[in-house]
Length: 192
Image (cartoon, rainbow, N blue to C red; front, side, top):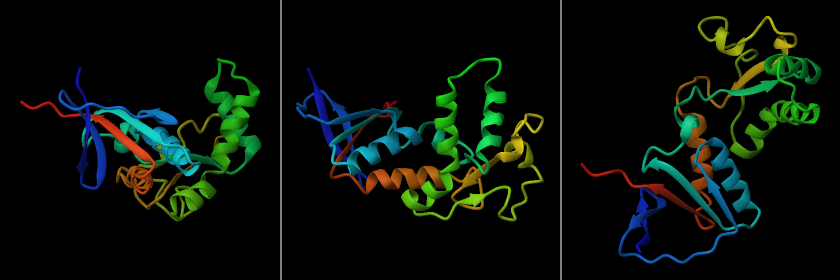
């Protein structure tokens, strides 16, 4: 049975299928998926002393999941009670546990600080940073304006643009900085 070998792709260590290689390794944490959540989980596990194996099904050069190809918008808020009302309206008629919604909303309330502290970027508010959010961006920022608490919702980016890949590049860079503690494995592109 084959194993894996490690190759260097533009400074990124990648494990690839190799029928000849033998692989025997132990990791503290295995993260499945190298999108925004996977990159974040792998980064913080490594920061806390864990050795991490990060696995993605995408071919080399296409990792990143939806985060790579999305608008790069992060949902944020500015009023806890208003944002709670908004998310309850968004999830209706389903009933989510109140503590789950509170946890989610508290996280959203802290996104701007997170962007500064952990991504090293100045967060950009699409409602308050003099951006043209009233134009074509308004339906994104104000997705459901008829819902109670919708005025509390905002979107944050790490640049004054969207669909520019900036958030994904930052998250990938955070992982790349930690390659001594992280190993990344992806599916090799098929040869035609």
